[in-house]
Length: 287
Length: 279
Image (cartoon, rainbow over all chains, first blue to last red; front, side):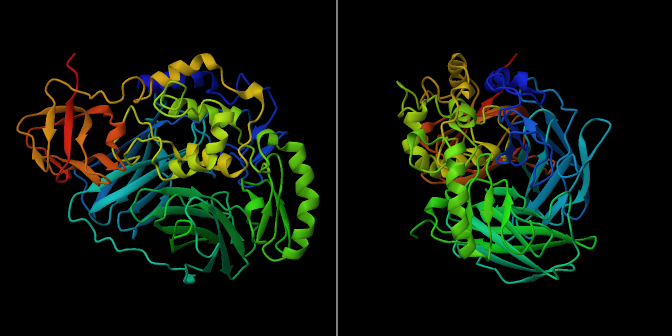
């Protein structure tokens, strides 16, 4: 705690979106979601549309507390998830949030066997916690990711773990699956460059959807992606690197380790959200 | 931005000089990306015209021949992360080579990226988000992204004015779990040594866990199974290295009633359950 308090001492002055003391005001404007998108002038991020902010707040981690009721939670029965966000300096409940892709809070739920995937949005209650009612479909471990942006901080992606008592699901080894997928009203094809992704190096994931018309932004972006390693350790949330409403959508991902990864992508067409997943074995250089 | 040929965008980091494929070419750092999935020949001709002048204008290649393709700099983002997460050991007089200065860090840029992506450094040794710890030293996804971006993008130094004040450095380092005598074990009166599945015979207010012995390369999840049936994740050790032994201190103590089972500790491992200090 003391560690965080000290970090807080350094960063406390940056709780509002203002330049660091060591920077000249107005020198650079940075997208809080895509920190590589910058400009010398204020404006909006060309990638995700968020307003660029001056300066650079320190990348400090906030605290996310997740409580699940009833206790114990039971598979197939309603449960209530409640998320509380606290600042890392004084552990106060955070009350102000920026919109991230049209929502204050994005939540991903993934089951241990990678069969369950959910992307939805808990709502802010009068208690300043975010709430979501969910039915965990089976027993076992789930990873629950909260994606939110406290005002004046940096965007946060924080993982929590929920264990639903009962037999753990059988976890099947992932093998390469690039086969085209028929989603709700889209067919989704995947090509990667390089063909064999290498850990620690950038991989371009190029999706082609058919039909190529009628695509719409979903939550402010042309697509959303969640990446999970088969050992349930790495969780990565990405948005398209290149997309313009046409049938080709490109994401760039650096797979951290030589593991197999499941990749879920979501695209919206004519008001319908399409979700498809692919499995990508990643090797080490020279393997 | 049309679908047909090249697109120009603010870009992410990439060391395009190392690429042999013409699928993509880009440069950034207040820069642009020139990219085309299909019009490769045109791209090859155009990229040198645009990329090289931009690199000269916006890059900071004082220490390298690499072309700078990232806006992330040592002075602005990376030094802050390293001071808070690495300098307790990686400093002059510390237990590892110094990473305090840009000139010291630059030669290690690729190895650093690999070490952090593999979670070998910082040697926290546990999976983030399984249990909640007040002394968590693991890098956040944002910090991982920044260091990776910097490493891949030519590792620029940036402007001196962006460097954080040095007088804060000691404070930041001292909060690390490895500052001082990292081998010193966290002994507490009333601690419980757990081996294998372990049932509490009386209530216990758990403040943290200290791995006393852990088999090499072991990965295991320690759970608290309460008498009422609920299960709470306590700690998922993965890549824990005894050489960097440390406690895992919970953000808030967990009240474990009598009858609680501590499960998941494999053969050959001993985990000390640390009681919360009495007021």
